[in-house]
Image (cartoon, rainbow, N blue to C red; front, side, top):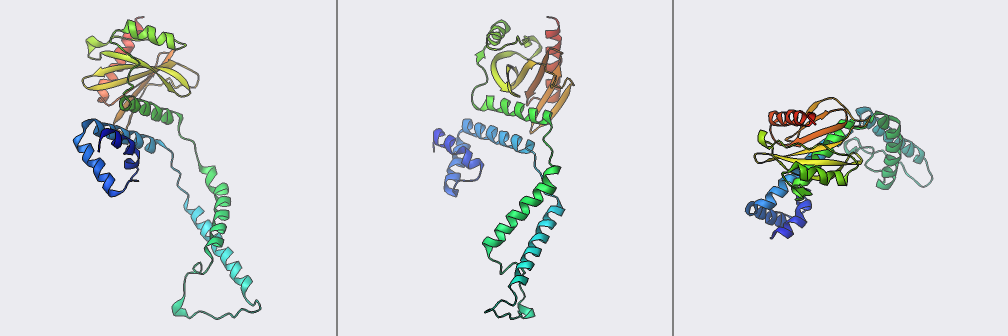
Length: 276
């Protein structure tokens, strides 16, 4: 199996949809190809990030009981309605052969009853308990997904450059705001480029810095009334996010560096941009 074939089958492999022989071929290729193995790990990490952040609503126990009770009542009413009909002989079943009350009900009738009962009860009981995911949690999911995508799709930078006077004018020409750019190479966080991104329904600037072998994506956009101004540090699926605002702009830095390095990066960027 070559890289092109493995890439086409990667989604199916991650979802356990492939037959055993094909799965073994992909596993063998991943052991032999570091590039595809890295893509597999990044893709898997992205799936876990999105999956863990997606709200999961568990039906309450009383909903299950109400559905079962309604089905028992409906089946019982049907049985009573059939007793004494002409041409039918009612023979009591021996005690030793007793079966569940639902075992002799036609499946299509039972499925229809279950669908009707479930729909009504979910509307009345379950939906009022659902709550939308927290806005900051949803944004954090988008940020991590964008960070992972930039590494996986080889689209880390639109403008690869360590010169802030090259990166900033390029971003200024593409966006309707002038994002601050800082050169932190002397402090151990060299700028390596920038790109355009799209988050939270608007275009944003993404500056890319490096710390040893780790990349830091710094997302910047003008602060809106909906944006939180609180400084926060978040950890999720092995990635760290730090958020702050200077009043004019909102900043989110995302990386897999250790938290102290990311916090240090944030402080250095604040100090550098505060001078301008």
